[in-house]
Each structure stands twice: as structure tokens, then as C-alpha cells.
Image 1 (cartoon, one colour):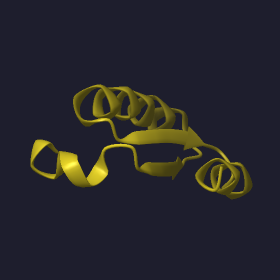
Image 2 (spheres, one colour; image 1 turned 30 degrees about the horizontal axis):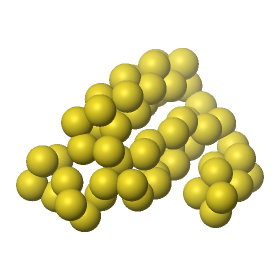
Image 3 (cartoon, helix red, strand yellow; image 1 turned 135 degrees about the horizontal axis):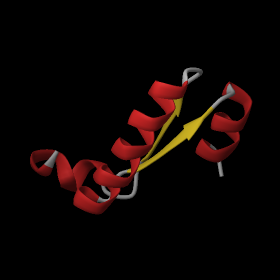
Image 4 (cartoon, rainbow, N blue to C red; image 1 turned 180 degrees about the vertical axis):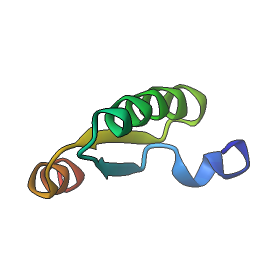
Length: 56
């Protein structure tokens, strides 16, 4: 991720998941990637909520 830090810093990505394991793993990724390179990743359970966040 460090190699593309300048490209992803401040950008958003939404992950839509429906399994407890996927939620937990995605939330760990969400925090780690933001702290390391400033890439904003959030976990959602519906497409509607993900799109709302992406477009805000």
C-alpha cells in the first residue's frame, strides 16, 4: 500500500459484507489501511448505505 499511498490517500472504498467473519476481518483492514496510508474504508451490510457514504 505504501507504493500507492499518494493515489489512495483520502479516497473512499466501501466493503459490503454479510458474514460475521467477513465483518470482523474487514473492520481490521479498515483501521489498518487508514492508519498506514489514509485510505478510507468502511464496512456496510447494504448497498444503499454504502452508496450513501461513498457519495457524501
